Image 1: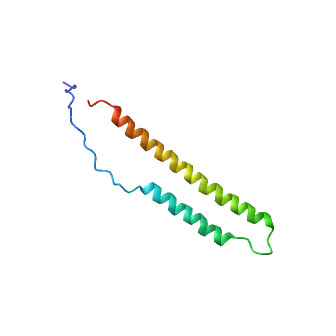
Image 2: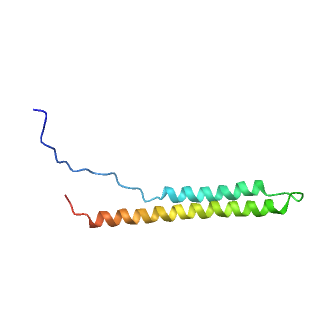
Length: 89
C-alpha cells in the first residue's frame, strides 16, 4: 500500500568542463594580492617593519592559496581513483 518497489534508474551526469575554474580563481587571487600589496607598499617615512609585515602577509596568502589548490588536486585524484575502482551497480 505505502511501499512501492524501488525504481532502478541510471543516473547520467553532465560532461565536465576541461577548464579548471578553481585554478583560474587562485591565479586571480594571487594577482590581487600583488595589486593590493602595490597599493599598500610603505612610503619612505613609515617604519621598516611595515614593509616586512606586508611582504610576509602577501607570501602567507599566496602559500595558503597554493596549498588549497594542491588539496583540490589531491581530492580530484582521489575521486577519479574511487570512480575507477568502484564496481558498476
